[in-house]
Image 1 (spheres, rainbow, N blue to C red):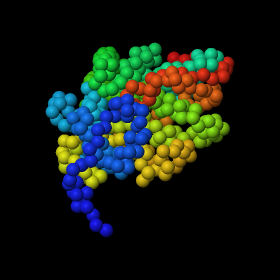
Image 2: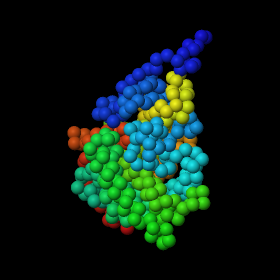
Image 3: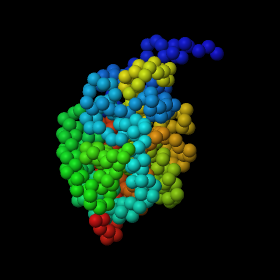
Image 4: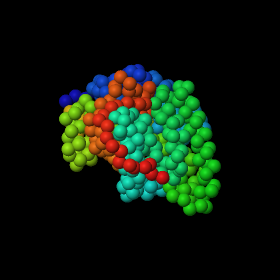
Length: 422
């Protein structure tokens, strides 16, 4: 069998595509676009946003995300001419700590944070989340109408994230609103910039709390960070704020997106909805399949640190690389019938939480909160019908593949008399 030497060396003209993950076209056709890229150009170059490589196949995505020496996460905030511009294309104007660090520094921060995100910590928060779900459903159950995003998907993860952080629960809307805006609008647009400015102001408010928390005893991540050390030194106020904001960004929208896409799909597949209602033991595998098939965070970026051949294409040091988790999760080399949602699929090595040391630190919370919210809906409003003419997807799914709102109707029921947790 002969081998084309250009594939071995990455020589020749690389495949070129015009790919923009923030456009309405991608939002409305991301499955078809992902499948086309997988079959025709799994590693291709796009001129969008100054140029980057789009990596779609599972093997190449796995190589990029696991090889920190060749593909760096670092973000030089001081020098925009430095090609190392972090994990988002185009770059996020705020440093994402510690996601935009490489080992060994990344590992130190990760070890410091791990206890707050362990399976044990996630289980400890479950009674709070169940109470919140029942309380929010109590507000709407007798009316026969609700919005799955505005009445459940947004407030529950936001409230739980505030509890995790150790911040006043009454402030959840103040923190959540700009985060929703950042992930639902095209990067760099006026609404995105407005929300980013609001988020920076909230960062200032968080920073003002840190000096007091350094000496006072209090619950929650923010207090823990105020007393934590990295390599023998306390975190700076700025680092604490950036970590807290990243945790809140991750907690507020990803689980909401997974829930809304799942409820939308279950309406189209009533027999699968009934399976989940009748067999709660199916929920664990179903959660992994919903994560795979909907991929709440469609893509993240890296920067090549040296010349490298990936997927038969030669990349140069300084090239930006976008890993399409959404496409990798549909790779037929890894997943049988990848376009089909199989609620009992196992094993399911999806990329939705990342891979290797960069796996999402909040994955235990995400799974737990999603399952509690979905079970609440299926138990209390199993016959729900979404008003699809009134539902609105995010204007852009480049950061989070979710919905802005999702009104629905169902058979009314009596409230259970549950109050919101304090």
